[in-house]
Length: 241
Image (cartoon, rainbow, N blue to C red; front, side, top):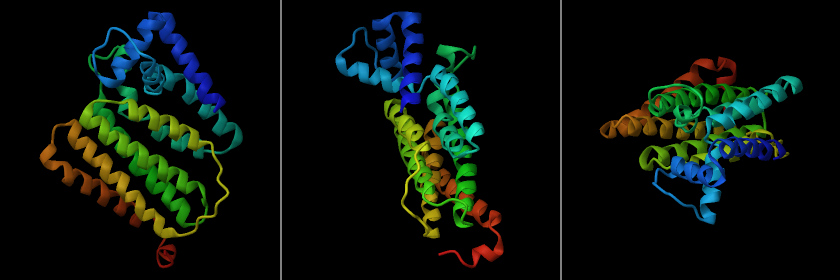
């Protein structure tokens, strides 16, 4: 929590120095909700803080810290989960307004990137869970992927990324937790199909392929299943369940 609070504060300071406190809050609120505004209310301050998690500046500040932590402690789970949380359309949407001189916000392209990242990381984490190298923390990854994919659908439909910012902060918090519950039911890996389905649907929405929404979702669903089948040793496959 200290890391998250500190980096959010530093990100806010960046915007305040750049625009002033009032303008910074209004700007962040507009970025997050896509609703024009010239003044702010107390609730808009909450929106601004949540939108900070979607800023490219926040990504640049917190990701090296997470990378250093993972390398120093030889614990790469926080890095894996944080990469998923920080690799979505929310980061890409502010690149133009922050640092990178891009001609447009590559949100659509980022939706493909985070869906691919989810697919690969889900297959890897699920495999680690099945062969016994990961126990209770698998639930943390599963929950994180669920809330990110659901907020990703909401973002692609409404262009409101405030829920995605909240999902990102929750994901970053979960990345550093170590639950004591013991989880051993290998059938849980089947639940990872659902986030893949949702990520596929969000890609369809971003590219205005609404007639292919379910097809894209099913395609991601099947890709995950295929990756799992190919990555699992045969001797382990017989014992699943």
